[in-house]
Image 1 (cartoon, each protein chain N blue to C red):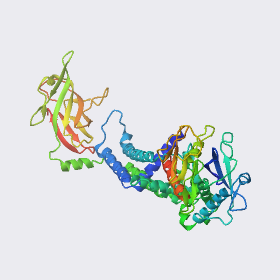
Image 2 (spheres, one colour):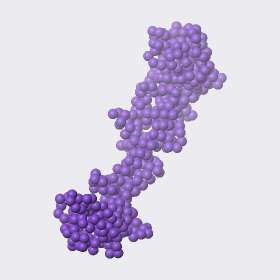
Image 3 (cartoon, rainbow over the protein chains, first blue to last red):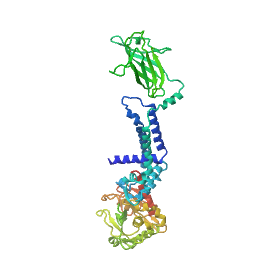
Length: 321
Length: 232
């Protein structure tokens, strides 16, 4: 338990050091926060079955914490490795170096000495630890090694480090309050794209006859739209899978509209409807339809449209108009 | 951690190696006095060594206006290695000088000489309770000098009846670790100048070579900083 608390304290101190005394610490956290927020905001995560709405909201904070934790772990590992290499041949604090009790000014000098053993990260970390003690007034007070790490936390000496660290939760709150799904990436993609978005293929699946042979075939593309031309013509209850331009990999949706001769399934057990919006992930969308009269001469009369999150249409096709 | 007594280890040889604690406490009416039991068996040469340590400390570190310190030598294993019948020679100079440097700083930090004032924390806080010292006085250069019979003294730190061992032994820079006065069966040759292997081959004792008391304290401080870097 004591070791776990010590580890947590060391991680907090290292994280505070990275955030308040280095450039790459805050840069990494800021970049991760913004990029991951932007990703969930505009690219969205795939709608996995276990993915719930609040994950879109909070995933960017989790990823930022993971990055900060990884940075802190890497820094601690490097410091630990150097410290192990410094271990002297003899151990004056035999048995109890962790409970060594010294005046605060002696700890200040010890941390200063430790900082001189190596350059770079090592020196910066221990100088930072030393400067945390500089602001403490009771320099003659005896302090044990265990409480040295947290001694400055509730004092003025820690205000600077805590303030800089607190900027990131403030940023997170701002990002949390900012609306998600801004379609900014859609605009960027529309501006950068050479080709207009389109629905390039429609595939028909279903069963025909009794007991029912499986059907899986593409629809034929003609000037007015897509047409069934094989066994799919005789399918009464089938499904279409549409393929649309899949860049950017944003979460678009496909709006299906049955103009007069078909219905689409809103879900298992639900009443058939004439209009339905389904998710379009990675350019793919699937929906089930019912054709009351599987007569090859009567077309489905269906319109399919790919739309942005704000329902602005990107591309549309007709299926057997 | 109490300020007093300041305690360190020292080895003494008079016919046989004897491990002793040197305790320095605030007491007495002279700048440096001996515990009456020790004073009764101390030879004039031994008193002169203490005076030299006092003068050396007063000149390099400083001395409190009312700084009265009492020195006591306590046998660590009274059964196996009792107090010697007499105290002679100068091999405790190093221990007394290092102990007095810390005692003076702890007693009155404001009396420190200007040159060593930045070292206040080092002087007052170095842990000495696991440090052994065996060094004589070189008056012409005001520094540590090699002691005789060092192998016998260091061997005494490995007596099986000792409750513990020192972590390190401070010796003079030119100290030859092979110098032996007593009889020993197949004493191992001391090849490593920074490590002493005892005759009974029970482990080894790290050796710290220092020019003087301040040098020794600074080197001990550095080593302790390295130890603490692993636990902070």
